[in-house]
Amino acid sequence: MAVFCNSDELHHVMDMLWRRIKDDPGMSGKLVEAKLIVQFRYRDPEGTLTIDCSDGNEMKIIVGPTRLKPVIEMSMKADIAHEFWLGKVNVPMAIISGKIVSRGPTPKALALLPVIRPAYTLYPQVLQDAGKKSA
Amino acid sequence: MLPFTFYSPTKIVFGEDTAYGVGDILKELGGSRPFVVSDANLVAAGVLRAVLESLKEAGLGDPVIFDQVPPDSDLDCVRSASALARQHGCDCIVAVGGGSVIDTGKAANISLVLDGDIRDFEGMHAVPRALAPLVVLPTTAGTGSEVSAVAMVKNKDEHTKLAFGSYYLFPSVAVLDPKLLMSLPPKLTAATGMDALTHAIECFCATTTNPASDALCLESMRMIFQDLCRATMHGDDLDARSSTLIASTMAGIAFTNGGVGIVHALAHTVGARYDTHHGVTNAIFLPYGMIFNMAACAHRFAFAFRSLCAALRAAPEPVGHWFAGASQHDSQAAEQLIEAVRQLHRACRLPTRLRDIGVPALSQDEISELAVVASTDSAIMFNVREASVEDLEYILKGAW
Ligand SMILES: NC(=O)c1ccc[n+]([C@@H]2O[C@H](COP(=O)([O-])OP(=O)(O)OC[C@H]3O[C@@H](n4cnc5c(N)ncnc54)[C@H](O)[C@@H]3O)[C@@H](O)[C@H]2O)c1
Ligand SMILES: [Fe+2]
Image (cartoon, rainbow over all chains, first blue to last red):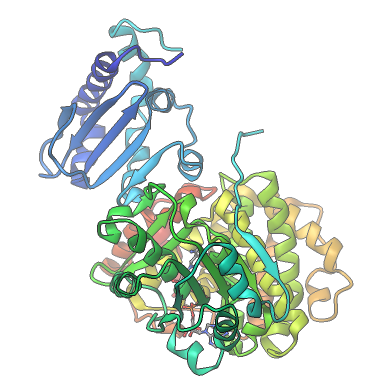
């Protein structure tokens, strides 16, 4: 069974998580410096989340469809995103095998993985606050 | 054990004169209007003769030929190639050449079949559906592109290498005809062989490797250590040519499923900036990358060295001497492997420093800039040890 019941729940959890990442200057500072627009596209259930740092100043979190053209697009099942934030996904392996599909200069986004690693510890709390079990 | 996926759908046909079978292979694949991709050197050296004869005999004569691939494919070249193929209504591709030609063939296939600019498909698995049949005939024994799901294309304006990775980029058939390599000059033979060796060594230690890739890496290392010198010094030795060609294909299958690492990240970066040959650049960085990775995978290097000793101890000199015996201590055996790499490098008379291949003296700012680019290269994500920008700067300085 899929972790997220529907798109609203998925969007709610991812939005809450990214807001906490934004509130953490250690993470958001470095993400903003990279000036990227990264879009996550989820399926089962469907969802879209866009992180826009293009102005090098502020991180904008856009939930749902947007006209903004991302520099990098990462598509995956919502369950994979959930496992990722629990720190359980070997990202290079998921990319080789196609579990994560990326469009654009992927390595630029991957270089930011160490930056967002501290968010793994935020995620269980986010799930709890959103009324979900973390497993 | 970690879960893994191993996928290698390319049919491999090996043998002397197999290039004469290309016409039939294309017909079996349903092709009727072939687009032949190659480069001017290869045309001048007569390397295409067998392929063109075979197309004619199979009734696929008058193919459209694109022979303008430069060393290291680039976006402009890919766009010109696919425009020509479209203009002539081609429905299948034959790539005869080194990695640059094969990667051009793969990337041109994307824009031949799909609408949109080639850059729209940059990334991993961003190609949404099957492309036209692609038959490749490698004329170097190095890149493994004949069996890989990747095409590396240079962006000249930004001095970077773009990676296109997709299961749809696997060639349909790889025809390995060692006779096509007879005209490959010694320096390029050695350099491309070192590229293959780098694939095998980097994959063997990558975070993403798997037991099937490991087996291919080990056998590939054995064949390259055993025969690369001979293929370099005696270009007409068909046994040595065959062995190194098969080894590079095996390493290609391995890294496609297991990844590469820091050496490739640095070689892509320096190659895109200073137009250095991929194989020579890898060869220069290989010992430095191995030393850096020792902290994380000495046991893997040691394992490889011990297996190589068992297989090559009795090999003719100088190879037998390099593998006369392995230390029982992992760190020492790992160093022995690095030393064997250096010996092979020297025996093949390849340059050992970046300054010897046209890389100018670099300022601290230039070194930092290169290190930042290398830190975001697609190859580095598989590396066994996480490398900081400072680590990459240190290696760049040492290798210069
Ligand atoms: N797609 C992949 O999986 C993959 C893997 C590794 C490297 N690469 C790419 O491959 C490229 C390098 O390819 P390469 O090392 O095969 O060299 P290459 O294709 O650039 O060729 C180098 C030179 O050798 C000449 N040459 C090739 N075969 C010859 C022959 N039989 N006789 C005489 N001359 C010959 C060519 O004309 C060219 O001038 C790089 O762009 C690299 O990024 C791709
Ligand atoms: Fe390579």
